[in-house]
Length: 135
Image (tube, rainbow, N blue to C red; front, side, top):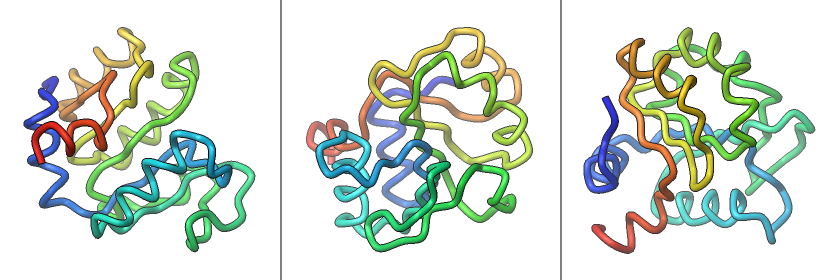
């Protein structure tokens, strides 16, 4: 099921545990800015970045494989859409309550697989923009 921006925002406002795949430690990157915004709104973020290290004061996990089912409520994806199919096995294992693909993160084949798995999806949207529009 594909959600509207308003529906997805309503969901995340009551589900505060999020894994951000592709969260960068570079403050100029949109992923860092959105991560900081969500953190400022009271979200418990889990950075997912293969380089590891600490991002926004939290130790990053190298991949979704390091998460246990139920550890996060939703997953926010900041990565090249061609890489989305590689994440499919881990996303299906984790069964998040929502999968949020950021602006420009669109892969129709991946979206169909997510919808067939019954995972609510929003794509080509930004939570910060939705927050400013509907929050």
